[in-house]
Image 1 (tube, protein in one colour):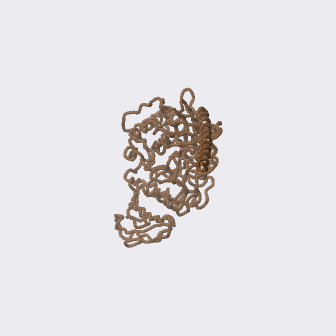
Image 2 (image 1 turned 90 degrees about the vertical axis):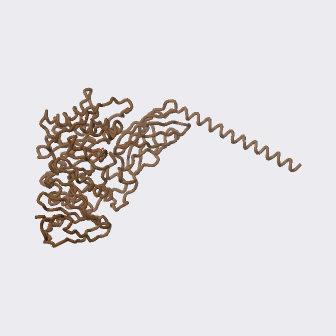
Image 3 (image 1 turned 180 degrees about the vertical axis):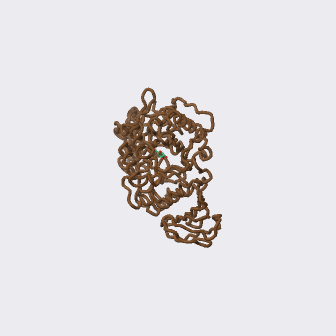
Length: 565
Ligand code: GLA
């Protein structure tokens, strides 16, 4: 009896439990089917507080039969959503991100919570060869907004750049001058020319020197700032030291009219007047575009308007064009690069014919497709050899020391460009900035300062205006320097100079001071006991029989001119 009673009670309890579970399951299914019917089509805006401060991420979603398409917009460009679905109160989609010429698909999963979407945005990977956490995709955030920026720069310094979970709400994105989304699937094809050598434009016999807006200002650039920089370039003595090009990078563009004519955005009310202002100071003006429909920052590119844009730049008085691959990787393959760059190279030269305005042509495709082997053939005067530099020793050193391989491709009229200078932006020590400047001079790299020249400190001014180091960079022989010896943290480079002298840079890549020795047997000098001059101390050190030995500070450099005759 007792046993029977217990069994019966258990059965009743079980029935009740099953009933409750069923009710819960049923309620759950009801809620899920309701959410599945909820349409998440529309524009969703998330404000991310974190590594980038007040950053806005915009999701433009279209849902049809449960499938999601649309785009994800970051402050540095918009990426198509290539696949996705909503299931109940969860969703997932794939974002096709562009990162230094690679298209990488990244999965995003999220939840519908009330009238919000909770998700972790897809972020582009770090620049090639820079390892995780050392950068963002092209068009990355301003240096001051980046985690770890300004916080010193020892190896491994700087935290990973990423955004965690965000909450997106229906809304209108903050207006900007960025161009509207592109439907890459239905984009009309631009025919590329058959390969043919574009003759040399005869410019840039020595590596171009000047200033570029990107490293400091990103897309927050305007006419007033550019004029101020031109003024400062003269008053600081930089112009006299050889800095001539004032280059406006991404963010100047507005929209095209019905005839395809591109207007600058209201931050640049009159480009012709700006060019005239810069020219009146004995300086040159540079600008920026992309062979793709969009620049890396999401502004209007030159795709399908190459000739028209080239003519317009020349008519404004533009003397330099940086042409950045960016969204072209959504349209073409690396194998098409040469033809795409040739198209603009030829267009610039045609524009010079009609206007008389010579234009330096700077390629920026991050060193892909062995650009150093065909750059001169598309009429280029310089080509980027890497992803984007960051204002940190590890980034700068990784880029700079890798350039030794490319030395043979540098020469008068055509230069390897390891990216603009970060000197003065605050993320490296003075010794590290001296290494940066010395290394770029040894490479025979373009010397494009990337800081705010209106507020130069004496220490930074002394680095950027070191005429003896500049003379090594600008030497008329135009030879790229290269590594001649390496011993532990000490790396020694040499660069032959037109006078028969040899520039020698002894770098210490370590974090403690170290002794460095250079033997003359490695320099092919004609003379015995050459005279040695220290280009940072600005002093003659005397004659040395077989070698010169010194102590190099951590992350620092000792740069010498060794007399050859
Ligand atoms: C890329 C380039 C940078 C800069 C930005 C502009 O990242 O490599 O030098 O021009 O685009 O968006």
